Image: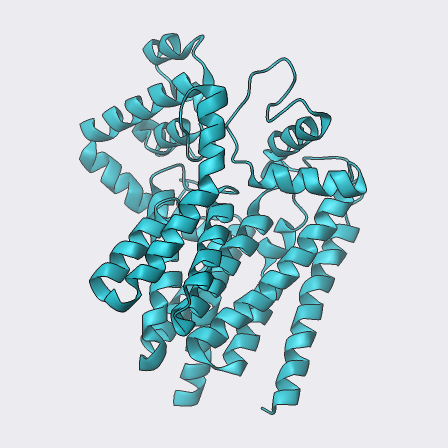
Length: 401
């Protein structure tokens, strides 16, 4: 492939990525009808916070309610920024998300090039993400997935560049973007520490860079924690939904309570304890009860975590017949994973050390999601980190034949 042809293919893929998302947005009949489906049921919890931020009410759901930390501030701030410029227009939000996801498509290509230096694999990885149905639909939802995916990809991209160039400034930028992604969705809170430990053990010549990353991450997260300490009386690094999600995700009688509310699972004793409790107190009570429940049923909890793997990665194993869409997702993810494992095994020796960032991100995020009520939508933002390995695996298999 010539350089000119490769660039033309990449531009075509980026154009396709943007076009299919804009078409999906254009097909929405009523843009003000949010949420449109069960998949978007959390949308009001984001745009209500954005509305109140713009009105001067503060980070709360209404003037009559106290400050909240149920949702991390990243996505509400994104919505508030769009509303500030374009008015309260959900069409503008969706178009903005389409543009962000088109950039994410390029980042998938760029990450593949940093890992493998194979242009064809990069184009194939970008094309796979451009046409990945959950990503296309996700750009039309008033949910945090698209923004989180963009920030997480930018973190990985800048971190890989930092590792190759050995530049502390790039490590700092990477840590900032990881902090912003965690403030959007707290799916990888311990990641900076885990990467630092891995660097100390296996890549000692880079541990200072990962220390800079961890410090930049901490400074990015700090204002949110201090705000919670000031307004809510406790330093909360992410959100006050941790206790509820942990309790719900490890409730053995319902096998992880994947489609039930946390309140419906509480015993009468716990209901009395949380009645009248503040948001922070409720979270602390539920965290304590969840840990107590896990400790008393260690074997059952371990088995449940294993059962959650097909739910999380393949949308299967809920005790009912899977739909055609679930089977399609399962098949697609299975192909991505099998090719990805092969691609990982075929990584050139010169760039193998770079694998620690995307692979650790995927593995650690999976482990953390298995601790709560695992749902397949949690791994949708991890797929673009897997696709470079899948594409390289496919190219390697073809070349080997």
